[in-house]
Length: 333
Image 1 (cartoon, helix red, strand yellow):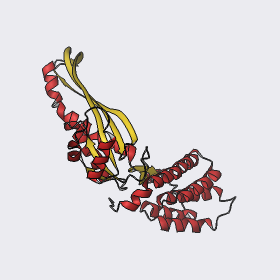
Image 2 (cartoon, rainbow, N blue to C red):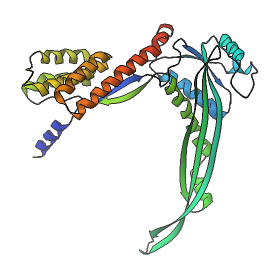
Image 3 (cartoon, rainbow, N blue to C red):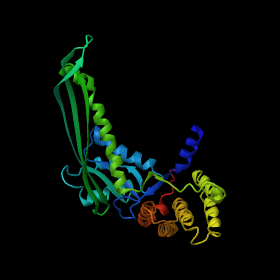
Image 4 (cartoon, one colour):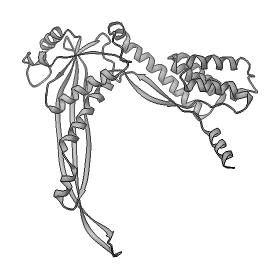
């Protein structure tokens, strides 16, 4: 009986594919801007970490949208006003000296932080089994960083002006207020960790980047009829996309439109996933649409919507990367 239950459990499980995809930037910077300078106008320990975070995100991305130049020394030599944007003549000098086509400027930064200690009463049983009340002190550290970025062109254009905040809090308990604060530890470590996230967040706004997603193909029926189908799923698990495509197309040649409608729909569905991985988004949408017409399920409908999104995102990504692909030979893969 136990082995039967295990078998039945296995039959009910659908395979899950983990896939890394490239998504377009939220904001499309002028495609001709392929090399940029990065400038920190605030220049404290946290903003320097934010700049480093942007550069590290760029180095970690498979898709190279911008070649990045650290132009801090060049900026410092310009002697531009502290308040307001970098003047147009200053931007031209910066671009000419750094040999770039634009500049990312960390324009403003403020940091709000506080530590608060609260007291509460808890009840606990002592060794004699009696309930005893005792005081607990909790130290809470709150940190919020407000940052403003400006993405500038060499003629003074502003391609993007964006401000946002990152925040977090940490807590620790103690028998006295001092013990609670001591248990909390060095709050500078918390602030450093928080500032490390700033650059990576803005990178995702202006540059294409990768993320991991999941897809669940149909497993295929047990028995002779599903043998080739399940074999194709095995190739999908091993990223053998072209082989899986060939198997599914071969299966579809011999299916009856009426008797095998659901089976056919599942072949279409899995083929759509294959084409998604091959980067053929028109074919992905086409087969997702065919699958939904035959299956009519929430699963097939949801995937058709995803196919429409991937197709649109692919077109947006192609426009964003058109010039960068020609000029940036670096490959981070």
